[in-house]
Amino acid sequence: MDLKDLIKQLAEKINQQKANILTEEATKNAFIMPFINALGYDVFNPLEVVPEMDCDLVKKKGEKIDYAIMKDGAPIILIECKHWHQDLLLHDTQLKKYFVASKAKFGVLTNGIRYLFYTDLENQNIMDDKPFLELDITDVKDYQLVELKKFHKSYFNIDDILSSASGLKYSTELKKIFAEELVNPTPEFVKYFAKKVYDGVITSKVQDQFSELVKRAFNSYINELISKRLKTALNSEEQREATETISAHAESEPVESAIGLKDGVVTTQEELDGFNIVRAIVRKSVDVSRVVYRDALTYFSILLDDNNRKPICRLYFNGKNKKYISTFKADKTETKHEIAGLNEIFSFEDELCEIIKIHDNK
Image 1 (tube, one colour):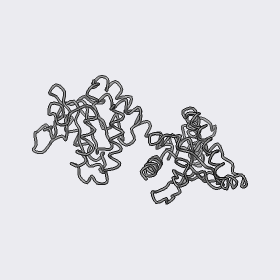
Image 2 (image 1 turned 180 degrees about the horizontal axis):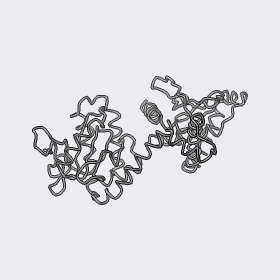
Image 3 (image 1 turned 120 degrees about the vertical axis):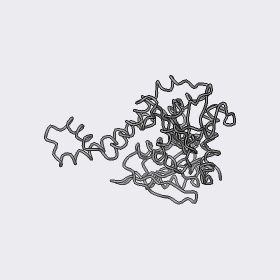
Image 4 (image 1 turned 120 degrees about the horizontal axis):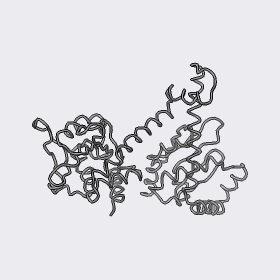
C-alpha cells in the first residue's frame, strides 16, 4: 500500500474514531503512531523512533519530546503531540525549545489531524515562527502529499526537503493573505487596484466604493476561473453518462418530467458550474458518475445515484439578489446557507463528503 492509500485509510479512521479519543495519549496511539508508521518508520524500534526523548538544554526533569525519529543515531525529526481537539499554535514555543536543544533539522507539531512542519530557514538552529508545510490528514492535497513523501524513510533527504521548504512557506503565507483580502480587503489592497483604474483622488468615499468593487471583481474572476478549469478537468464522458441517466429517469418518472416542462424549468450555466464544483469536491469520496442532478422550478438538486432519498445538496440560484446552497443531515434535515459566489461552495466540503458517507453506509 503506497503513502497516499495509507493516509486515506488513516483519514477514514480519524473521522470514525475521533469522538471517542479523549486524551493526548489516546491521540498518539490511535492517530499519530499510525502516521509515523505510514512514513516507513517502526515506532517499536528504538533505533528508528525514540518516544519521550530527553530534549532540553538544561536537562530539566520531565522536559521530553513525544517522539524523535532517528537516523544514524541522531534525531532528524522531532514530533510534539497534542490532543486532537487542541489548538496547535498555543504549543509551538515548547517545540522551539526542543528544536534548539536537539539539533534536529525538522520539527513537527501535531494533534493527529493537523500537522505543522518547521525548520530553521531564517536563523540556523532556531526554529522558524511559521511552518513551511501545513496539512490536514483528512484533506491532504496532491502537492502536500508530494512534500510529505520526502519525509518517508525510503526517500528522506535533508537537502531535497530544504530546497522546496522556503517556497512552500512563503507561498502558504501568501495564500492566507489572499484569502483574507478577498473576504475583507484592507485599505492598502483596495487603494492599489483603485489607482490602476481611477484617475481622481482616492477619498474615503471612493475607498469605500472600491472596497466592495474589488471584492466582487475578484470573486467574479475566481468563479470564472473555477468554471473554466472544471470544464476542462471533469471528464466529458462522465457528463454525457450523467445526462443519459437523467434522461432515463425523466422517461421512467413522467410526472416529475411533465412538471418540469409545464413550469418551464431552465437549467442555467451557473447551476451547471455549481454542479461541476460539487462533483470536484466529492471526487475523493465517491465515483463522480454517481453524482447527478435534477432541476426543479425553485431549486437545483444534486443527488447520489439519482435517488431522491439520497440528497447531497440543493442550489438555490433563481433568486434575483441572493444565492443559497443547502446541505443535509442524516435525518434529512435541510439547512440553507447564503453564498456570495460559486467559489464559496468549496467551504462546504466536509458537509458534502459526510452526507455521501452516510448514504453509502445505510
